Image (cartoon, rainbow, N blue to C red):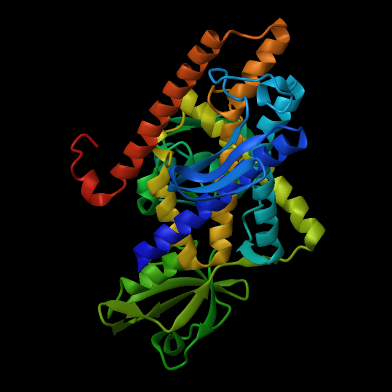
Length: 444
Protein backbone atom coordinates (compact mmCIF):
# COMPACT_ATOMS: atom_id res chain seq x y z
CA UNK A 1 0.00 0.00 0.00
CA UNK A 2 2.82 2.40 0.90
CA UNK A 3 4.47 1.69 -2.44
CA UNK A 4 1.26 2.55 -4.28
CA UNK A 5 0.92 5.82 -2.33
CA UNK A 6 4.56 6.68 -3.10
CA UNK A 7 4.19 6.03 -6.83
CA UNK A 8 0.87 7.87 -7.14
CA UNK A 9 1.98 10.88 -5.07
CA UNK A 10 5.29 11.10 -6.97
CA UNK A 11 3.45 11.03 -10.31
CA UNK A 12 1.06 13.70 -9.04
CA UNK A 13 3.80 16.00 -7.70
CA UNK A 14 6.01 15.68 -10.75
CA UNK A 15 3.06 15.90 -13.13
CA UNK A 16 1.82 19.17 -11.62
CA UNK A 17 5.28 20.77 -11.55
CA UNK A 18 6.14 19.76 -15.13
CA UNK A 19 2.68 20.76 -16.41
CA UNK A 20 2.94 24.22 -14.84
CA UNK A 21 6.48 24.70 -16.21
CA UNK A 22 5.64 23.64 -19.75
CA UNK A 23 2.34 25.55 -19.63
CA UNK A 24 4.38 28.70 -19.08
CA UNK A 25 6.40 28.04 -22.25
CA UNK A 26 3.25 27.09 -24.15
CA UNK A 27 1.22 30.17 -23.21
CA UNK A 28 4.14 32.53 -23.86
CA UNK A 29 4.76 30.92 -27.27
CA UNK A 30 1.11 31.31 -28.22
CA UNK A 31 1.13 34.91 -27.01
CA UNK A 32 4.00 35.96 -29.28
CA UNK A 33 2.61 33.99 -32.24
CA UNK A 34 4.86 30.91 -32.30
CA UNK A 35 3.35 27.73 -33.74
CA UNK A 36 3.45 24.97 -31.12
CA UNK A 37 3.73 21.51 -32.68
CA UNK A 38 3.48 19.39 -29.53
CA UNK A 39 2.77 19.78 -25.81
CA UNK A 40 3.58 16.58 -23.91
CA UNK A 41 3.79 15.48 -20.28
CA UNK A 42 6.30 12.66 -19.84
CA UNK A 43 8.92 11.52 -22.33
CA UNK A 44 8.49 9.31 -25.39
CA UNK A 45 7.07 6.91 -26.34
CA UNK A 46 3.75 8.74 -26.48
CA UNK A 47 0.98 6.54 -25.11
CA UNK A 48 -1.97 8.91 -25.48
CA UNK A 49 -2.45 11.96 -27.68
CA UNK A 50 -4.95 14.11 -29.53
CA UNK A 51 -4.65 17.05 -31.89
CA UNK A 52 -6.30 20.44 -31.67
CA UNK A 53 -5.40 22.99 -34.29
CA UNK A 54 -1.67 22.97 -35.02
CA UNK A 55 -0.79 21.35 -31.68
CA UNK A 56 -0.64 17.71 -30.66
CA UNK A 57 -1.25 17.15 -26.94
CA UNK A 58 0.21 13.96 -25.51
CA UNK A 59 1.20 11.91 -22.49
CA UNK A 60 4.51 10.05 -22.52
CA UNK A 61 5.30 6.67 -20.99
CA UNK A 62 8.24 7.99 -18.90
CA UNK A 63 6.80 10.37 -16.25
CA UNK A 64 10.04 12.20 -15.48
CA UNK A 65 9.53 15.42 -17.42
CA UNK A 66 7.78 16.89 -20.42
CA UNK A 67 8.34 19.30 -23.26
CA UNK A 68 6.88 21.87 -25.63
CA UNK A 69 8.02 21.48 -29.24
CA UNK A 70 7.83 24.72 -31.22
CA UNK A 71 8.18 25.19 -34.96
CA UNK A 72 11.67 26.26 -36.02
CA UNK A 73 13.30 26.04 -32.57
CA UNK A 74 16.10 23.66 -33.58
CA UNK A 75 18.78 25.19 -35.84
CA UNK A 76 19.54 21.73 -37.27
CA UNK A 77 16.00 21.29 -38.55
CA UNK A 78 14.88 22.64 -41.88
CA UNK A 79 13.25 26.05 -41.52
CA UNK A 80 10.82 27.80 -43.84
CA UNK A 81 11.53 31.28 -42.50
CA UNK A 82 7.87 31.64 -41.57
CA UNK A 83 7.07 34.33 -39.01
CA UNK A 84 5.50 31.78 -36.66
CA UNK A 85 8.77 29.89 -36.09
CA UNK A 86 10.73 30.28 -32.84
CA UNK A 87 14.01 31.43 -34.40
CA UNK A 88 12.16 33.92 -36.59
CA UNK A 89 11.10 35.86 -33.51
CA UNK A 90 13.12 38.65 -31.90
CA UNK A 91 15.38 37.96 -28.93
CA UNK A 92 12.90 39.76 -26.68
CA UNK A 93 10.06 37.48 -27.81
CA UNK A 94 12.21 34.35 -27.42
CA UNK A 95 13.26 35.56 -23.97
CA UNK A 96 9.59 35.78 -22.94
CA UNK A 97 9.03 32.17 -24.02
CA UNK A 98 12.11 30.87 -22.19
CA UNK A 99 11.59 32.81 -18.97
CA UNK A 100 7.94 31.85 -18.49
CA UNK A 101 8.64 28.20 -17.61
CA UNK A 102 10.76 28.97 -14.52
CA UNK A 103 8.52 31.96 -13.70
CA UNK A 104 5.46 29.70 -13.53
CA UNK A 105 7.28 27.39 -11.11
CA UNK A 106 8.19 30.33 -8.89
CA UNK A 107 4.60 31.57 -8.97
CA UNK A 108 3.33 28.07 -8.14
CA UNK A 109 5.62 28.00 -5.08
CA UNK A 110 4.18 31.33 -3.90
CA UNK A 111 0.57 30.21 -4.49
CA UNK A 112 0.97 26.84 -2.74
CA UNK A 113 2.76 28.40 0.24
CA UNK A 114 0.07 31.08 0.52
CA UNK A 115 -2.67 28.41 0.52
CA UNK A 116 -0.88 26.51 3.29
CA UNK A 117 -0.35 29.67 5.35
CA UNK A 118 -3.97 30.70 4.89
CA UNK A 119 -5.07 27.44 6.55
CA UNK A 120 -3.36 28.61 9.73
CA UNK A 121 -0.76 26.73 11.71
CA UNK A 122 0.88 26.34 15.08
CA UNK A 123 4.59 27.18 14.90
CA UNK A 124 7.32 27.04 17.58
CA UNK A 125 7.50 30.24 19.59
CA UNK A 126 11.26 30.47 19.09
CA UNK A 127 11.25 30.27 15.26
CA UNK A 128 11.38 34.05 14.72
CA UNK A 129 13.40 34.86 17.87
CA UNK A 130 17.15 35.67 17.92
CA UNK A 131 19.27 32.49 18.22
CA UNK A 132 20.44 32.77 21.83
CA UNK A 133 21.83 29.40 22.94
CA UNK A 134 19.78 27.80 25.69
CA UNK A 135 21.23 24.28 25.71
CA UNK A 136 24.48 22.83 24.39
CA UNK A 137 24.27 19.06 23.95
CA UNK A 138 26.98 17.11 25.76
CA UNK A 139 29.72 15.94 23.39
CA UNK A 140 28.26 17.89 20.47
CA UNK A 141 30.33 19.88 17.92
CA UNK A 142 29.22 23.08 19.68
CA UNK A 143 30.40 21.80 23.08
CA UNK A 144 33.78 20.82 21.64
CA UNK A 145 34.14 24.30 20.11
CA UNK A 146 33.39 26.16 23.38
CA UNK A 147 29.94 27.46 22.45
CA UNK A 148 28.12 28.14 25.71
CA UNK A 149 24.54 28.73 26.90
CA UNK A 150 23.77 32.44 26.65
CA UNK A 151 25.86 32.96 23.51
CA UNK A 152 24.05 34.90 20.78
CA UNK A 153 24.81 33.33 17.39
CA UNK A 154 25.15 36.19 14.91
CA UNK A 155 26.52 34.48 11.78
CA UNK A 156 27.19 31.14 10.11
CA UNK A 157 30.02 31.01 7.56
CA UNK A 158 29.94 34.79 7.35
CA UNK A 159 26.20 34.97 6.66
CA UNK A 160 24.13 36.86 9.28
CA UNK A 161 21.44 34.87 11.10
CA UNK A 162 18.71 36.83 12.86
CA UNK A 163 16.33 34.03 13.87
CA UNK A 164 16.45 30.39 14.93
CA UNK A 165 14.79 29.46 11.65
CA UNK A 166 17.61 31.10 9.67
CA UNK A 167 20.20 29.46 11.95
CA UNK A 168 18.85 25.94 11.43
CA UNK A 169 18.66 26.39 7.64
CA UNK A 170 22.22 27.74 7.51
CA UNK A 171 23.66 24.87 9.58
CA UNK A 172 21.66 22.07 7.97
CA UNK A 173 23.28 22.65 4.56
CA UNK A 174 26.85 22.42 5.89
CA UNK A 175 27.13 18.90 7.24
CA UNK A 176 30.71 17.62 7.66
CA UNK A 177 32.11 21.03 6.64
CA UNK A 178 34.05 23.18 9.11
CA UNK A 179 32.36 26.59 9.32
CA UNK A 180 33.06 29.74 11.33
CA UNK A 181 30.27 30.57 13.78
CA UNK A 182 30.08 34.21 14.88
CA UNK A 183 29.07 34.70 18.52
CA UNK A 184 28.27 37.57 20.85
CA UNK A 185 29.23 36.73 24.46
CA UNK A 186 29.00 39.35 27.22
CA UNK A 187 29.33 42.11 24.64
CA UNK A 188 32.40 40.54 23.00
CA UNK A 189 32.42 39.28 19.40
CA UNK A 190 33.92 35.79 19.08
CA UNK A 191 34.39 33.26 16.30
CA UNK A 192 34.40 29.50 16.77
CA UNK A 193 35.16 26.88 14.11
CA UNK A 194 32.51 24.15 14.20
CA UNK A 195 31.92 21.08 12.04
CA UNK A 196 28.17 20.22 11.90
CA UNK A 197 27.46 16.49 11.99
CA UNK A 198 24.56 14.69 10.30
CA UNK A 199 21.47 14.49 12.48
CA UNK A 200 20.80 10.85 13.48
CA UNK A 201 17.23 11.02 12.19
CA UNK A 202 18.22 12.73 8.92
CA UNK A 203 21.46 10.91 8.06
CA UNK A 204 20.21 9.90 4.62
CA UNK A 205 20.16 13.58 3.58
CA UNK A 206 23.20 14.65 5.67
CA UNK A 207 21.27 17.35 7.54
CA UNK A 208 23.86 19.18 9.63
CA UNK A 209 23.55 19.85 13.37
CA UNK A 210 25.96 21.42 15.89
CA UNK A 211 24.03 20.54 19.05
CA UNK A 212 22.61 23.87 20.23
CA UNK A 213 18.98 24.45 21.14
CA UNK A 214 16.86 27.43 22.24
CA UNK A 215 15.93 28.09 25.85
CA UNK A 216 12.45 26.58 25.65
CA UNK A 217 10.84 23.65 27.44
CA UNK A 218 7.67 21.58 27.01
CA UNK A 219 4.79 21.94 29.42
CA UNK A 220 2.32 19.38 30.71
CA UNK A 221 -1.06 19.84 29.05
CA UNK A 222 -3.01 17.07 30.78
CA UNK A 223 -2.40 14.63 33.66
CA UNK A 224 -4.30 11.44 34.47
CA UNK A 225 -4.81 11.53 38.25
CA UNK A 226 -4.71 7.70 38.57
CA UNK A 227 -1.40 7.33 36.68
CA UNK A 228 2.14 7.74 38.11
CA UNK A 229 2.41 11.44 37.18
CA UNK A 230 -0.85 12.29 38.99
CA UNK A 231 0.13 10.29 42.06
CA UNK A 232 3.54 12.02 42.15
CA UNK A 233 1.96 15.48 42.15
CA UNK A 234 2.66 16.60 38.58
CA UNK A 235 0.03 19.14 37.48
CA UNK A 236 -1.18 20.62 34.18
CA UNK A 237 0.88 23.68 33.30
CA UNK A 238 4.11 22.37 34.83
CA UNK A 239 7.12 23.21 32.66
CA UNK A 240 9.59 20.31 32.43
CA UNK A 241 13.17 21.66 32.42
CA UNK A 242 15.21 18.48 32.87
CA UNK A 243 15.02 14.74 33.58
CA UNK A 244 17.78 13.22 35.73
CA UNK A 245 19.82 16.36 35.09
CA UNK A 246 19.51 16.13 31.29
CA UNK A 247 17.99 19.32 29.77
CA UNK A 248 14.65 18.89 28.02
CA UNK A 249 13.87 21.26 25.14
CA UNK A 250 11.15 19.51 23.15
CA UNK A 251 8.20 17.29 24.06
CA UNK A 252 9.58 14.37 22.04
CA UNK A 253 12.69 14.39 24.25
CA UNK A 254 10.51 14.13 27.35
CA UNK A 255 8.49 11.27 25.86
CA UNK A 256 11.75 9.55 24.93
CA UNK A 257 13.10 9.86 28.48
CA UNK A 258 9.87 8.52 29.99
CA UNK A 259 9.88 5.52 27.64
CA UNK A 260 13.45 4.66 28.77
CA UNK A 261 12.41 4.41 32.47
CA UNK A 262 9.92 1.53 32.73
CA UNK A 263 9.75 0.66 36.43
CA UNK A 264 12.76 2.90 37.22
CA UNK A 265 12.68 6.05 39.32
CA UNK A 266 13.30 9.33 37.46
CA UNK A 267 13.86 12.84 38.76
CA UNK A 268 12.00 15.63 36.94
CA UNK A 269 13.05 19.27 37.32
CA UNK A 270 10.00 21.45 36.71
CA UNK A 271 8.92 25.06 36.98
CA UNK A 272 5.48 25.72 38.50
CA UNK A 273 4.20 29.27 38.80
CA UNK A 274 7.70 30.61 38.19
CA UNK A 275 9.23 28.54 41.02
CA UNK A 276 11.59 25.61 40.31
CA UNK A 277 10.75 22.24 41.89
CA UNK A 278 12.04 18.68 41.80
CA UNK A 279 9.69 15.72 41.63
CA UNK A 280 10.57 12.05 41.72
CA UNK A 281 8.26 9.73 39.86
CA UNK A 282 8.21 6.00 39.06
CA UNK A 283 6.87 5.29 35.54
CA UNK A 284 4.65 2.25 35.04
CA UNK A 285 5.55 -0.42 32.51
CA UNK A 286 3.51 -0.48 29.33
CA UNK A 287 5.09 -3.40 27.55
CA UNK A 288 8.79 -2.52 27.34
CA UNK A 289 8.39 1.25 27.71
CA UNK A 290 7.71 3.64 30.57
CA UNK A 291 4.38 5.37 31.11
CA UNK A 292 3.56 8.45 33.23
CA UNK A 293 0.07 9.39 32.06
CA UNK A 294 0.83 12.93 30.89
CA UNK A 295 0.50 14.79 27.62
CA UNK A 296 3.57 17.02 27.08
CA UNK A 297 3.32 19.73 24.41
CA UNK A 298 5.75 22.30 23.03
CA UNK A 299 5.30 26.04 23.33
CA UNK A 300 3.74 27.22 20.08
CA UNK A 301 1.91 30.22 18.71
CA UNK A 302 -0.94 30.22 16.22
CA UNK A 303 -0.66 31.94 12.85
CA UNK A 304 -3.89 32.65 10.98
CA UNK A 305 -3.28 35.28 8.28
CA UNK A 306 -5.90 36.71 5.97
CA UNK A 307 -5.66 36.20 2.17
CA UNK A 308 -3.51 39.28 1.47
CA UNK A 309 -1.28 38.68 4.50
CA UNK A 310 -0.87 35.02 3.49
CA UNK A 311 0.36 36.05 0.03
CA UNK A 312 2.73 38.63 1.53
CA UNK A 313 4.13 36.09 3.99
CA UNK A 314 4.45 33.56 1.17
CA UNK A 315 6.49 35.97 -0.96
CA UNK A 316 8.73 36.75 2.02
CA UNK A 317 9.28 33.09 2.90
CA UNK A 318 9.97 32.06 -0.70
CA UNK A 319 12.40 34.97 -1.09
CA UNK A 320 14.19 33.80 2.06
CA UNK A 321 14.28 30.18 0.89
CA UNK A 322 15.44 31.29 -2.57
CA UNK A 323 18.39 33.04 -0.96
CA UNK A 324 19.22 29.87 0.97
CA UNK A 325 18.98 27.77 -2.21
CA UNK A 326 21.35 30.10 -4.06
CA UNK A 327 23.75 29.97 -1.09
CA UNK A 328 23.59 26.18 -1.24
CA UNK A 329 24.32 26.16 -4.98
CA UNK A 330 27.29 28.45 -4.39
CA UNK A 331 28.35 26.19 -1.53
CA UNK A 332 28.33 23.20 -3.89
CA UNK A 333 30.54 25.11 -6.33
CA UNK A 334 32.98 26.12 -3.56
CA UNK A 335 32.76 22.68 -1.83
CA UNK A 336 31.27 24.32 1.26
CA UNK A 337 28.08 22.25 0.98
CA UNK A 338 28.01 18.46 0.83
CA UNK A 339 26.79 17.08 -2.54
CA UNK A 340 25.14 14.28 -0.56
CA UNK A 341 22.29 16.70 0.20
CA UNK A 342 21.25 16.65 -3.46
CA UNK A 343 18.14 14.61 -4.17
CA UNK A 344 17.06 12.81 -7.32
CA UNK A 345 13.83 11.15 -8.50
CA UNK A 346 14.00 8.27 -5.99
CA UNK A 347 14.39 10.58 -2.97
CA UNK A 348 11.67 12.91 -4.25
CA UNK A 349 9.39 9.90 -4.68
CA UNK A 350 10.09 8.80 -1.10
CA UNK A 351 9.40 12.27 0.27
CA UNK A 352 6.23 12.53 -1.84
CA UNK A 353 4.95 9.27 -0.39
CA UNK A 354 5.80 10.26 3.18
CA UNK A 355 4.20 13.70 2.75
CA UNK A 356 1.07 12.25 1.13
CA UNK A 357 0.56 9.94 4.11
CA UNK A 358 0.69 12.96 6.43
CA UNK A 359 -2.00 14.82 4.42
CA UNK A 360 -2.52 17.47 1.75
CA UNK A 361 -0.82 20.29 3.64
CA UNK A 362 2.60 18.56 3.93
CA UNK A 363 2.30 17.42 0.30
CA UNK A 364 1.57 20.97 -0.86
CA UNK A 365 4.54 22.31 1.12
CA UNK A 366 6.78 19.70 -0.51
CA UNK A 367 5.45 20.69 -3.93
CA UNK A 368 6.09 24.36 -3.16
CA UNK A 369 9.68 23.61 -2.12
CA UNK A 370 10.43 21.50 -5.19
CA UNK A 371 8.75 24.03 -7.49
CA UNK A 372 10.89 26.83 -6.05
CA UNK A 373 14.04 24.74 -6.55
CA UNK A 374 12.98 23.80 -10.08
CA UNK A 375 12.28 27.41 -11.04
CA UNK A 376 15.57 28.74 -9.66
CA UNK A 377 17.74 25.93 -11.03
CA UNK A 378 16.22 26.33 -14.49
CA UNK A 379 17.36 29.95 -14.42
CA UNK A 380 20.99 28.94 -13.88
CA UNK A 381 23.22 30.04 -16.80
CA UNK A 382 23.93 26.44 -17.83
CA UNK A 383 23.41 25.65 -21.53
CA UNK A 384 20.54 23.18 -22.08
CA UNK A 385 18.56 24.83 -19.24
CA UNK A 386 16.24 27.78 -19.90
CA UNK A 387 18.70 30.06 -18.12
CA UNK A 388 21.49 28.80 -20.36
CA UNK A 389 19.58 29.68 -23.52
CA UNK A 390 18.82 33.12 -22.06
CA UNK A 391 22.51 33.51 -21.18
CA UNK A 392 23.59 32.68 -24.75
CA UNK A 393 21.09 35.18 -26.17
CA UNK A 394 22.33 37.83 -23.75
CA UNK A 395 25.94 37.32 -24.89
CA UNK A 396 24.82 37.47 -28.52
CA UNK A 397 23.08 40.74 -27.75
CA UNK A 398 26.22 42.17 -26.14
CA UNK A 399 28.53 41.22 -29.01
CA UNK A 400 25.84 42.22 -31.54
CA UNK A 401 26.04 39.02 -33.55
CA UNK A 402 24.63 35.50 -33.35
CA UNK A 403 26.93 32.59 -32.66
CA UNK A 404 27.29 29.91 -35.30
CA UNK A 405 25.41 26.64 -34.97
CA UNK A 406 28.70 24.87 -34.25
CA UNK A 407 29.57 27.20 -31.34
CA UNK A 408 26.09 26.80 -29.87
CA UNK A 409 26.36 23.02 -30.18
CA UNK A 410 29.61 23.08 -28.18
CA UNK A 411 27.98 25.23 -25.50
CA UNK A 412 25.00 22.90 -25.30
CA UNK A 413 27.30 19.87 -25.14
CA UNK A 414 29.19 21.44 -22.22
CA UNK A 415 25.90 22.10 -20.46
CA UNK A 416 24.76 18.53 -21.16
CA UNK A 417 27.95 17.16 -19.60
CA UNK A 418 27.39 19.28 -16.47
CA UNK A 419 23.81 18.04 -16.19
CA UNK A 420 24.89 14.41 -16.66
CA UNK A 421 27.46 14.78 -13.89
CA UNK A 422 24.75 16.25 -11.67
CA UNK A 423 22.37 13.43 -12.60
CA UNK A 424 24.96 10.77 -11.78
CA UNK A 425 25.53 12.45 -8.39
CA UNK A 426 21.86 12.60 -7.42
CA UNK A 427 21.16 9.03 -8.60
CA UNK A 428 24.16 7.80 -6.60
CA UNK A 429 22.85 9.69 -3.55
CA UNK A 430 19.38 8.20 -4.01
CA UNK A 431 20.72 4.67 -4.27
CA UNK A 432 23.08 5.13 -1.30
CA UNK A 433 20.09 6.15 0.86
CA UNK A 434 18.42 2.77 0.22
CA UNK A 435 19.68 0.66 3.11
CA UNK A 436 20.32 -2.64 1.32
CA UNK A 437 22.09 -0.90 -1.59
CA UNK A 438 24.09 1.27 0.81
CA UNK A 439 25.41 -1.88 2.49
CA UNK A 440 26.89 -2.90 -0.88
CA UNK A 441 29.00 0.27 -0.94
CA UNK A 442 31.96 -0.47 1.38
CA UNK A 443 33.58 2.90 0.55
CA UNK A 444 30.73 4.85 2.16
